[in-house]
Image (cartoon, rainbow, N blue to C red; front, side):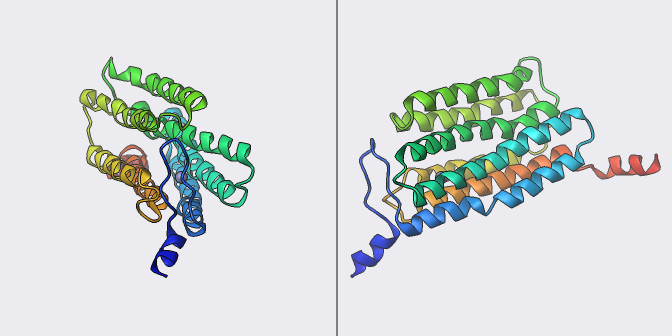
Length: 240
Ligand SMILES: [Zn+2]
């Protein structure tokens, strides 16, 4: 009886070369935990767009907005299809690849406002384009080796997540660093659940929540330190 009730919330773990099959409850949770953030991410991106004062702020708001909304939208579509249309194996497989590719672009997009709007040293300014090369390499990797070497895939995300942060060493203005670090810690803690399907019930949905919290902290930092007009600036604008 106890095992029967428990099995509703979690299926057995599978070998590393196979994909874990969530229970009905887990499928629903996987969809809900990212669908919930689609509207807030569209609103949040629009706010940054409205607060933009110049061309670079506008471009960065677009890039970041696409990455943020794209992550939640693609993830929700993939999880819905893998729940309701699981017999469409090819479509599900393509969407799963797309879901993983979007993560690389999401990471690059999360760094974009910092790289584009903060003053950087000569070597660090190259990171503005290096992150997009990294995201493209990650995408190509997913295309050819999707799900084949899962630890390599995880390592790629960690490198992509932390390597661009080296530019901090060249930043004169380091406001927002604490928030960037806190967001990064949430992503890392979430990875424990990302790797725990079949060990912890709703592990993937919990991973989604950690991603949402990490993204929320990073959004707050971008809004506060890169877009929100400070009081001094407001005074200048009003006096004009
Ligand atoms: Zn997911």
